[in-house]
Image 1 (spheres, one colour):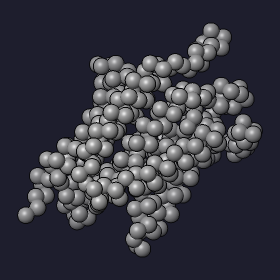
Image 2 (image 1 turned 30 degrees about the horizontal axis):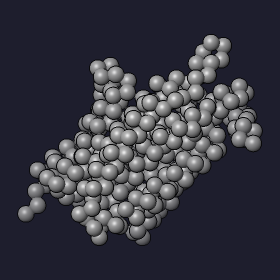
Image 3 (image 1 turned 60 degrees about the vertical axis):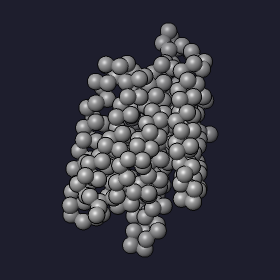
Image 4 (image 1 turned 30 degrees about the vertical axis):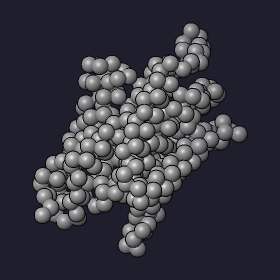
Length: 314
């Protein structure tokens, strides 16, 4: 059934000469690159708590996805059926295992968290609707491009929604018991470390076709180190900010917005130019882990410290 659906979409793509493919590729790419900037801007400038909620949900969900993906070890659709031909350049960002969809588990906690945040105000409800539409398009794009089966996307969507719900309950609990946050951060850090140990030493399927390894587990671990690294970095970064920095969001006035947008420039540079040097210097696993650590500390701790100096509260 799932392969039949993908073949149907493939036939439709061919019938319209890939007219929708560039848009679908862009939606997919945006979800794993710059979509993160929106909750970061909210965290810095609009509502610190809501920004933290979305960021914590995102880091948790992508870490869970990494563990699930390397546990299930499900092959991509074109490996399961040679009739599947992914569209455009989609295959270049979709190597390795398939289940659950990483793009979906990235997009769901961010778009979903934004939708929940915007829904609380009458003037921003329309933004909630846009976020839901963008999320559904992103999910559909993974099927449309032929890189994920419907069940890959559905499980990724459910994982994201479940993470948002669990994180909302956790944030409500911490609002009543703030002294428990340090213990929870320590527990999350330890679980992340255990996840790294698990994916490093577990066994993986080693299947060859015509002398070629279908999926290299070492390459799959690369993204998992990066994803789990975000959660492990978030825990000390949040502790440092909470204990010593204690910044307050800038507000949506001209100066606050300008400083928020300027702060995204180093984040853009980190994402685009730091990854490769760290991988070359430290190695494919720990280089990506270090990349996540630098990025998360900048977003959660370093630039908030700058904001706390610039926007001093009397």
